[in-house]
Amino acid sequence: MKLPPSYWTKRRGLAALIGALDGRARFVGGAVRDTLLGAEVKDVDIATPLLPDDVMERLRAASIKVIPTGIDHGTVTALLPDGPVEITTLRRDVSTDGRRATVAFSDDWREDAARRDFTINALFADPETLEIFDYFDGLEDLEQRRIRFIGSAAERIAEDHLRIMRYFRFLARFGQNELDAEAFRACVEAAPKLEQLSRERIADELLKLLATDDPRFAVGKMLEGSIFDHIIAGTDPKAGEILARLVSREQTHHIPPGAVRRLVALLPKDADQGGTIAKSLKLSKKLQRALAERLPSQNAGMTPPVARLFRGENDIRALAYRTGVEAARDIALLFADDDALPDLLAHLQNWQPPVFPMTGGELIERGLKPGPIVARTLAMIEQAWIDNGFPDEKWVTEFADGLDFNRGT
Image (cartoon, rainbow, N blue to C red; front, top):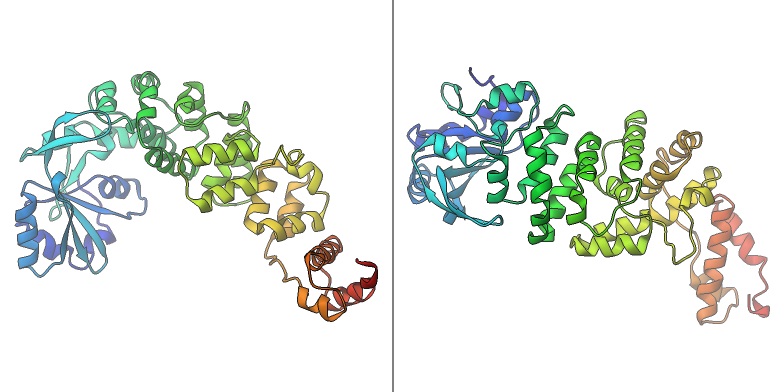
């Protein structure tokens, strides 16, 4: 079988790179897999039996810029006009501890394929003939949309515990709602090992999983196997049900997947608990804020937000003014009643929060004494402006003129 012709095989500089390696190179991994699936190819990876120093010397001799991005593990990166290409020397594992591997270089293509995670990721293609090399029946698995570890699932997971997360991500992205029984059993049994991995790596895989088109089946199986018990400190008791409803709503209203929105579906519905979990995952400050905006705060006396806030157009827009349109839309998708949701989303469509047309300086010019009273008064006027549907500047001016500043308002 041959790889179908694809635009990415014609990238500028790629032919010169292959030539510099004297033809001793094959495309490998995601580029081969995604081309066969008709999906967009983002990254191009090349495997070669040539040693890393030799690769760098050859590329430099061909005037191709190359940097030693992971040379200890055999990887260098060629900087081509249409994007970087990683070239990795064939390898075999010498030792592994579930977090990192010690490797030795090899000249055996099958040996290199055997150390990879899934059969669909161990496909090679000749850059010139496009002939595909399949050592572990990855083509059949790809056709059946079956995610299967190479060899023993338990052994592959023992080599790298993060493969548990990768299994469910690939199941969500490429699978057909069908589990490989051996793989699932191995993932469940090894799940406690996830606690040994850095939270950054766990969070990265979790967010990638949640960003897939439809993670419902994969996440449901993770919940069934108690995988999340070793990832985060608690999930919502109805996490699977909430996520399923959320994804269904996204699809109905043609809203792209949102990893943060879907993470909120899984978390306990309390901003403080969610914040603790976000910190434990070492999420960025930006992502922590995004979660906090979308989770109700029990300490502040808030019930799930929609019942109290979403009574009509002005309520959803008031929320969007405070949190941003994207956060308000996410909250509606997560918590709104089915009957109310279409109108709520329509009220946010193409709406931009207005700018409050008054400053503290203007209140002082009207006779209000400088001090904390200025901020309180400004906030009171702004709230009235929001409650009245964001009227124009004339309304704000007349409202302010009607206040008696001499009485300390």
